[in-house]
Image 1 (cartoon, one colour):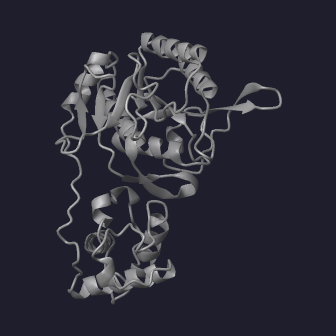
Image 2: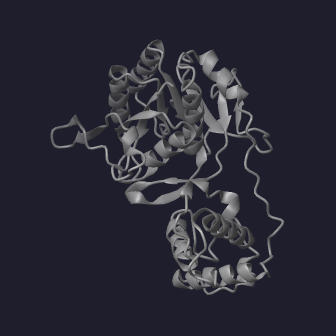
Image 3: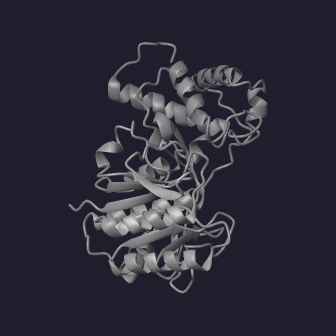
Length: 347
């Protein structure tokens, strides 16, 4: 089985992640030395933002044989410059990668010289047979460099789409993909929800990398788009029919008590009946995409769930209080069936 090589130009990778790091071949970092007015290349690719780790983990969940060259150009504030992007693309010409994942876009007016360099570099990489996936800017159409004809641009799925990936070869941005949040590894061993066109771009990269594991000759644009067109997975559907409901069974009631206790620790004083009427990740609970990891860890401790696989958490599992309780029930029963009778007879 072939191991596709993917360059992820982003904010780096969490070097403490013991699952991801065995898949890292070599990492690079580019930053500007303001005093000397020059670009410095070094090997410190540790992720201080989490976005790059999100991309890598998303790809790895789809293609388990993939190997990475992380190239860090985004700082802890989520910012970079076109000159750093140019240096990263130059590096991609030197290293033996199959795919380049670029989940960023230009948000300011480009100098003509800079844009010429960007276009030429993307063309050079295409001539080398390297596939570049570039995310379209969220809420903005036809952003650079996603519209270049030397890359495959990835934008947002239209409302009502029946597949996670749609391909239109005649559009400037040829691919639309699912932007729904997924739970992935971030910086410093934490997990967070990853969404938007950055997630869509990493997802599409993972789909191609998975196909290349068994057929590593998929290097032409037409072949790549053929692979993406064949992907027929349906978008995730958020079921809201249980809005306003809470469990009445014994285990459900016990889980609800543990959730309420944990929510109090997070500053939420609302009743469970009130919480059940709204999305769980909301102002009413104080739980959001970024602190959900802390919250769910505390709930797991309360319920003595010790073997959770965070990658199995889906947004539909926690969109409502009712759904969250059902998810936790499944986790309890899974752990009991796999590891034996629980020591706490209350649960």
